[in-house]
Length: 262
Image (cartoon, rainbow, N blue to C red; front, side, top):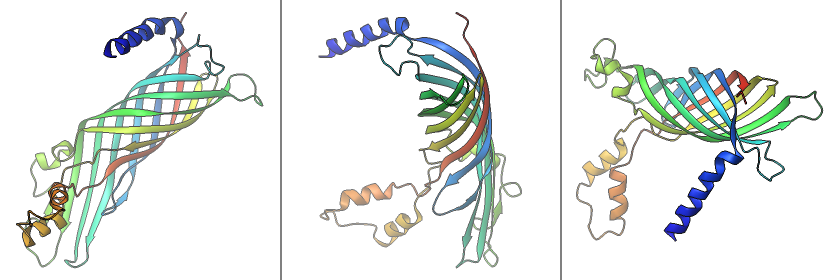
């Protein structure tokens, strides 16, 4: 069975250059709202950005009526992501303010569908595309401050730009560098110009942080009953990540593309 799969995959790769080709290359620049989704935090967006290039790959010789409409798009982009966030601790009369701004690399691989609008002159297209993207953080800054009147603990009164070290201000000393996201975009193409509205939804939590509620549970019940049927669930909960925030971006981009020379 494995040999059959290898033979079929090899046959597909051999046939692929004859039935597909790179058709266009282009560049895009996008601006929009970048923020974090987390039920425990109040967040407001910062200006997110994308700048980079892409290539389109079409299956031009396929015996399919939609062969001229379906394409693959791969790209390489420089990105800016981040958020403003705030937490209010009512019982302690404490407030926490923070932000982070990160810069990185994004490599998306997407499947697209474009349709020439028959009611308009030639070379007017509507587009829809989606696919996964690999994100790698390169550089970033983070600011985090909490003020708690009446409580002198340094864990409740701090400012990373005053009381912290250089590492405290480096975003990727706290945040994960690697993220996997999914991109969904709709767009319009007029000749070689493109306009796209893009949603970029991340899946990887920004940081690893212990769940305060689980720590409290462990303190009040340090030795759970080994005969308890839920013991495996407790072990899983002890490792639960309290920080649920993931990167989200809604962006409007403008681009220009050219065909590959034949």
